Image (cartoon, rainbow, N blue to C red; front, side, top):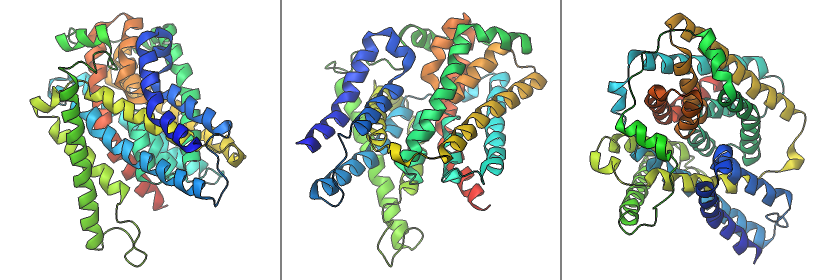
Length: 404
């Protein structure tokens, strides 16, 4: 009975979260992902999902839990990328591209230097943690979760890293929306070359990116389900490619029969196919696929957070927190220096930083606080490109650092 209730929480609470998110503005400031992780951590701390090791219930629940986690992220990635208009890249101003490049350079330098500084301080699985930090600071939680799944990171480590990241990044967002953007305007007092807000930008400003209303509308729902079917098809292709590479001896261990479904191969395949598909206008205009993808991300978030084990926290957790703090501070400083030399104004820097650190859904509230709608599209473009490249960058960082 407890297993059935736990699975029901995994699958139903994301619906409850997005319904509450849609109704109450205070929850829109907190964010759906934070709420989902909170639900999972409560499940863990109360012992509700803890079963006696070695029992049939423990084995059954673990297998179901793993299945939910393995399916949710691969289904979410295409759904969240389908609506992304990557043609905006070609229409972005040079300063927008410069702000993006500066942010990517900043996070790369911060992660690699942080690895060498903290690698002997007891941070568990620091190569993969570095990869996840690269992913979350170039596009947000989707990349973070995708990398955690693809690299096989321990769920407790995933939850700890995300907890520290939220504790460190949330004050930065509060600082910016509370007037901190004025400081960036003084540090980067350059002319505003942003284009006027477009029809797309006006729609986002009015309704937000995570707009869960009308998802069950009889005209909308079938088209959204078409996007889900396409996502399932991409997952099948990724799984098929993984099996092919296994049979060719490229991945997995043929002697033990493990690694037939290589998560890294599947995630990268799905991401690539989704970006290609997004260039089709018919696919890009499928309604509410981004929101449905977010629901799958919330399912994963609750499941992974419920595996959090507070008894596994030791002194290495302090080093992990300092590692995350170092990456954020160093990347912010390097990005500011880059923007100073590139003559990028404070508002563009602000939306670039938020787009990379927190993903596109956080851009409209920040733009509203600054009162400068002209940088809205620039921030969205930077965040979307971050979605597209974050997983690739994270995997590259992980394999590069493993060489050391």
